[in-house]
Image 1: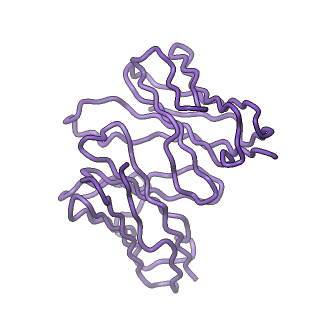
Image 2 (image 1 turned 90 degrees about the vertical axis):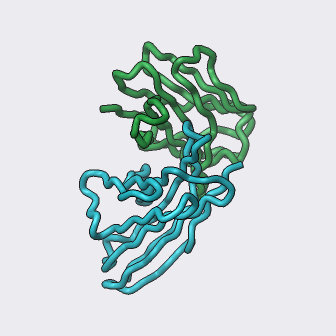
Length: 120
Length: 116
């Protein structure tokens, strides 16, 4: 079974600085997807970034980038130039990559989350 | 982008009553919808997965007679909490996956249920 571990329950960073959130996972699959989701105080879950395991290039979305180390099964999120609006819970998630018609509903396996506070 | 709505956003009910929560995909057809439960400062716990026109698949430990799920159309799934009790109080979130968006789930804003 797949598991996702986020070892940092809480983190804080000063506005405009850079912070890295860690995530490790365990799987025997070779093809899969990894995600970082953000849940702000409004509790609306927002996709931050997505990585496909077969792609070696690390995904980047504006100030958000990942360090994907497949062999080490590590998927950290770097937030550059932190902004007050980045304050939120951040969840790392894993999903198998299976055929479209395999009958699998592609469940997300979630980490426990990291609460990030950006301080002014 | 893909938008998922939930209704109501919050509900307070008396113990023993049933509550229905709706989840709608507004601008895409959702072949699969997922229902989650989230306690304060905790991660999401998947309750069940529903496919349009078929019975929902419940996760281990989730009472299917307690949490009734209906996915009657490609844009609507409902979760009914039957004979609600205070321990059912929680934040319920739905997500939807469309035919084209197979690699991503789109989340609703959640429903806060309080059972008195």
